[in-house]
Amino acid sequence: MGENNILGEQHTPQPSRRVSAVVVPLLGLIAVIVGLIVAWTNQSTSFGWFAYAPLSETVFIGNGGAMVSQGTQIGLAVTVVGLLVLAFRAGLAIGRRRSR
Image: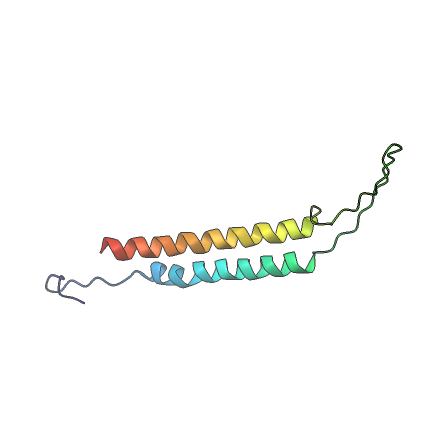
């Protein structure tokens, strides 16, 4: 590991890099988990409307898939931010390995 070092020179990772190598992915993973929990617990939303269509003889029945609660939206947004942090950190780690 020290074949390319000059006599007396040592290349050791800086403490801030070692800490960020653990903390950043951990925060990203926590954001993903919390976002999924928030999105999962806020799935149901209640709403209603009244529409009058005098010439129509059919009844419209919505499947409910188009309505997403605000809590679910926030949970999914936090999940996406966590995944972006994890992807950025993984790309940074791969780039550092390839540059050596």
